[in-house]
Image 1 (cartoon, rainbow, N blue to C red):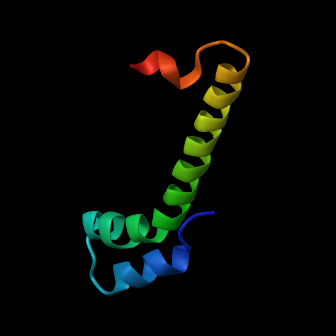
Image 2 (cartoon, rainbow, N blue to C red; image 1 turned 180 degrees about the vertical axis):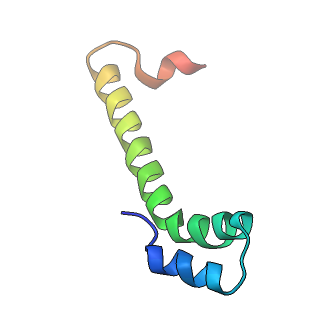
Image 3 (cartoon, one colour; image 1 turned 30 degrees about the horizontal axis):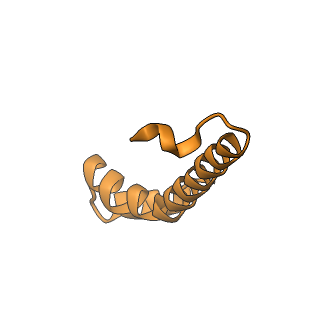
Length: 64
């Protein structure tokens, strides 16, 4: 997965600088992937702490 090279080429042909391509093309195209990765990692972390709490290792109660 990544940004299609033709999209970057089109932005460059419209005169976009490297910084504009990074922030206005690459970052905007990758937001759905970043959100799904964050969601999967958050759910995995909560699941691991729930299992740890169930077996007596403390889980989330050790954070406060």
